Figure 1: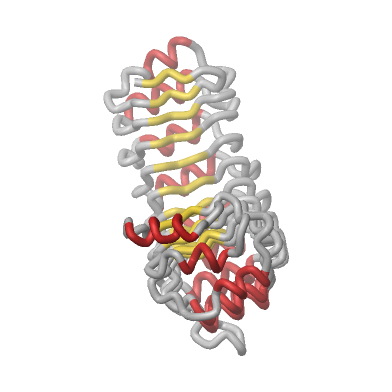
Figure 2 (figure 1 turned 90 degrees about the vertical axis):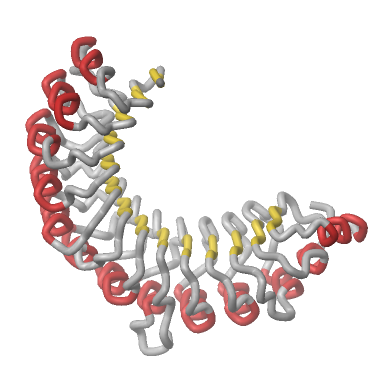
Length: 341
C-alpha cells in the first residue's frame, strides 16, 4: 500500500476503521497516522515488515486497535511482541501464524502485557514449546496472570509441544472455546486426559496428531467436554472403538471429521443413532465404509447437511442413492466432482 498524504486524509474523512495492507512501500507509521481511530490492522504477508518498522509505528498507545494480523511476517521477532504488549493494551485478537522467529520469550511478553487477549494464532511458530504455553496460562514463575480470557488458541504445527502444554491449557484457560492442535505430533492420548476437563471447549482439532488413538478419544468422551466439532482426520490409530466412545460421551457433536481413520461400517453402526444432531460428517479415504454404512447414515443421521465420501472405494450407486435422499443434504463430496443442492 502506498499511503500518500491525500490518501490518509481520505481514509480519515471516510471513517475507515479496518485496514488491510497488501504491501508496505512506505513506513508503517505513515499508514497508522492516517487512521487515528483504527480498530483492525491486517499486515498478513508483508514480508518486508521488520521489528524496526513496528517500533517506529508503535511509539504511543493505540487504544482503539483490537485486532492485529501479522501472519507470515517472518522478520517479526519477540522484540515486536514486547512493543505490542506495551502499546496495544486493548488488543483482543493477535494473529502470528507463520512468524517463525517468535519464541517463548515473546509469549512471556504477551502474558505480561495483554491479559485481555481473546484469540491467539501461533500456527507454525516452531520455536514455541511447553514453557511458552505455560507463560500464556499464567502458570510459570515469571508470567504474572497470563491471558485467562483466551477463547481461541491456534497451535497448529507447533512441533515442540507435548502433553505438558495441554496441562497448562487445561489449568490456565477457563474460557477456551476453540483449540487447534492439528499436526502437533508431540501430543498423545495422555494429553487428552487434560483436555477432557476443559468444560468450556466446543471445537477441537486433532487432525494429523499421529499419537492420538482410541484411548485418547476415550479420555475425551468420559470427561466434562461438550464439544460441537471434533476433527480426528488422519489420526491413523483411531478406529471403530473411538466411534463407540464418541457415541457414549460426545453426543452433542454437530461436526465430525474422520478422514483416513481406520473406521468401518461397524463403527458407523455404533455412532449413527446417538449422534442425531450431526450436521457434517467427513469420512473420506475410509476404505472400510460400504453401502451398509451409508444405509445406517441415511436412516439415523437425518439432519446431515454435508458428507465427504472422497476415496471411499467400496461404495456403489446404491449407497449414494440412499445418501441423496437425506432431506437436509446440501453438499456431497465424492472427490473429483461434487454434487450439491
